[in-house]
Length: 251
Image 1 (cartoon, rainbow, N blue to C red):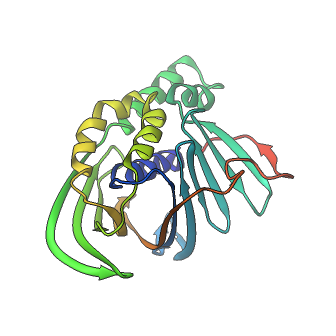
Image 2 (image 1 turned 90 degrees about the vertical axis):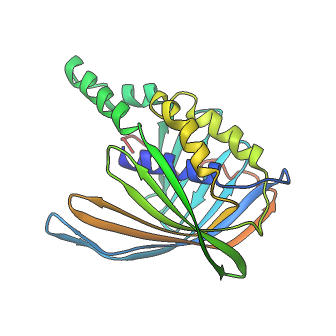
């Protein structure tokens, strides 16, 4: 479930922070670094990966060496591919369907508790502070913003460097967001205020440094935009590869 919520927040960030012009699909290549962290006596080492993302009117796909994540707005579905195991899992983006899937073996009392917990977790608010700081990152002229997201999981603070050098079609992403969020009441209640705040970030995010605390341990990650272009997404990017077997389980 944590992964599902993180992906929803990721998709919202993509949707709400891109500025306007053409109608093409968008390709992005990002470098993602996650700091090492210790939790419950175990150390999770630092991790670096390259992620490639396509965003289209139909959906969103993110690929890294280990996994691919596909989000289909119209179908209200998320697909996670495990490339090493050659397996895939499907999960509904519709919150009611997701809760039914997660609680199918639970008692009525447990189902009610899980539903209340999910409603609470999906309630969040955001605030954006524009700063006067500017610098060039990967040839793009950027301005610094501070984004704070408050949720039941705790605050997430992000230092965002965004550029207006890149122009894309905001309509594509708004259509995708509307489809994805249509069945998520917890997000609907706070979506409008979050959208107004996120619109303060002018242009495309080039570098984002995010920090949040879980179980009294700080977690820090950095996402850097390496490549950005408009074009036509390859045919079949939302198709499950041949030879992959379907698995079951919760995100």
